[in-house]
Length: 394
Figure (cartoon, rainbow, N blue to C red):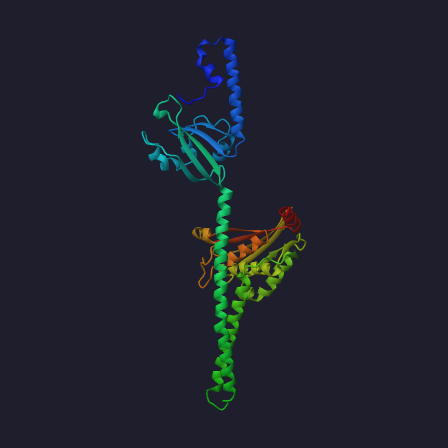
């Protein structure tokens, strides 16, 4: 073929039938060395590389590919890509049909074995010279994009959350203006009523105005607390004993918990390793989680709080005996404005997640309908967080 370069190995293979036993043995050794070289090269590549036939039979897989699709040693013979990646073959069936002009194909696929991950699949047909059309093969390149996709999703989620929080903060701020106006006019009316003591309806009106003033004051307090809770600001980190903050919140909420008949069982260690945290933001996390638990339990129930630590982290678990979370609601737990509570605003868990992330921590939720929910907060220990910050500054 014009333009094709022939190696010395090609020339030797062309005279294969004329080689004696010694030269044939040398040729086999040389082929083995070249195969070993190419194997070593392919196994240093992070992407998975497969060669498959038109029916999906895997003829070659490098080490990265075997890890990605869960092939064990000795399982390559007889393995098919369609079996290892269910759902892939139907999406490619039309392109793989006999006589079809097969294009270069790209897919993002979800693998559940050997562990959940997202993989980008790039598949290109090739045909060895001199073979029939039906014997065409495909080179498949697999790239693990799990972390890349998670990072992208997290950035989108953070951007979405920030937009919602800023919008909510703006609305809350705007509500403050009419409330201030109401306060001023109620004060003016109250003053005028004092001059009308002889009037028959003055006292009931004064009581009504006092009620209105208290309600305006309460709304103003709600807005102030709401803004404090959702306004994105970096945490003011200081060495903190997590149990001290928790006990302070529980003392504050003791009256409400008692009125609702909720028993609190706190099994916490006073000598837990310190963490770096913003006390006020930490309180907000605890308030939100306890409020969610109370809502889930209604009247009566049990709130169990436990703490523990290992070499790297401090854990705080909140378990309630409430109604639990439906399976279909799990994927939207941290979405803004998603709520199953009448009158709920759906920002509580989103605020909890944002605060935990800014503290270098994580939120884990386990739940079963009709049994209850466990929320686990994971905080890096003070010394570990300091090490992380120092290594990140280099």
